[in-house]
Image (cartoon, rainbow, N blue to C red; front, side, top):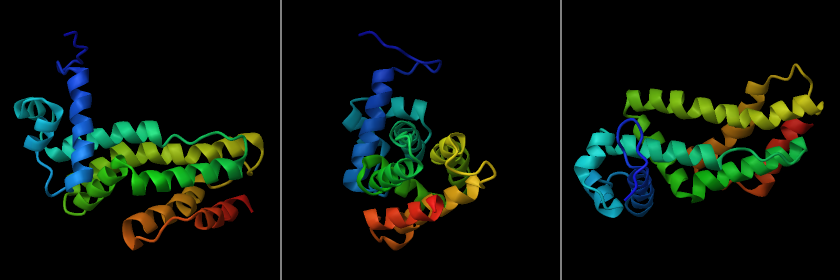
Length: 189
């Protein structure tokens, strides 16, 4: 078998199997029932292999989530601010509510309420990158002249994605197309 390992000697195929197994098992069993032993069995690797690569199930989940988010949450470029925002917010809501990676994010967010180190890591390693992705449609709009150059992009991001996260993580209300449209109108108007 030909392994493409990184500097830690990990087999890329085994690493991806572990990350997929963690995603799947979290969605099936929830955070409390997820174990390294279960992940190892599902991935077809020894649990010692997982412990050699990740110190805890939270670390496995974090890596699984980070890889998914980088790929799945990149905003589309429709060529129009309203279209870009609509597509991005709908994708974000779908991702957070219906994907395995969204379940991982919700679990990590819940766990971070009790784990300050995880909270700091989530902010530093995920939210910083996600915020940059969330800004891209607005930055493109400034470059196209659809928004003034002095637009406070951080405040606009807060007004756009904050309510989506609030509904998903706090109230449990659905993020409907009408709700997304109301958020888009706030920025485009």
